[in-house]
Length: 50
Image (cartoon, rainbow, N blue to C red; front, side, top):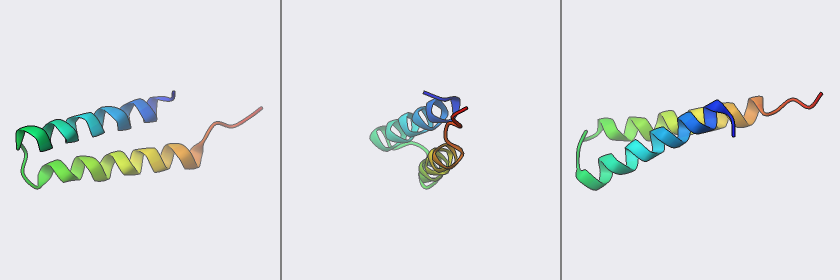
């Protein structure tokens, strides 16, 4: 698993924690958007086969 996927997973984890414990208000949803962007960038860049 690449670095970007780990980063996206960690961001999603913190997003879920924010939803469960009601912290961050509307700002917590920005984490979900950032995680989605990270996953999309990782999928687009993909693994280049040599």
